[in-house]
Length: 160
Image: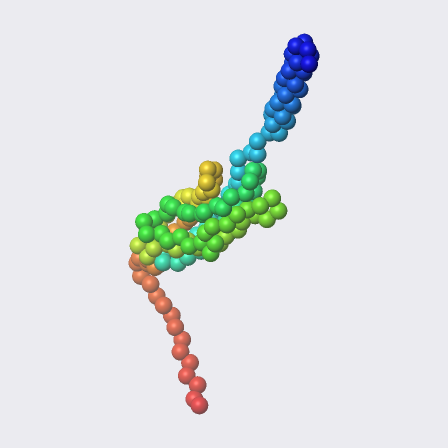
């Protein structure tokens, strides 16, 4: 085979290889990467009132926004010292068609001072985090009365 034919063949093969490589690289760049998982967190209702040593339950919903769905772990903090938080489902995965829903029960301690408190409800996945706030109002469990109090009562006895 003449030397010119070998050089021409080598150049042709090189051009074909480079064209294939460029095509493969072009295909890779035309496919955008999958977006990072994202979700939002909602609560219902967003405020409530409870007496000392009592509890209330709210609904926490994690809705899928984009990316590859991941498990979300829920937590809560804030409120008066000693407040307890219980989720019926603490971990779950929202999908495009189904949100992850959990009931959060908030137990106010007997020693809680009456007043308004913010509860921070957080959802954590591997990288994203979402949070929302719940406004908790605590009332005294005992009614304090000052001054004179008159209680009228009437008792009826029926004979048997």
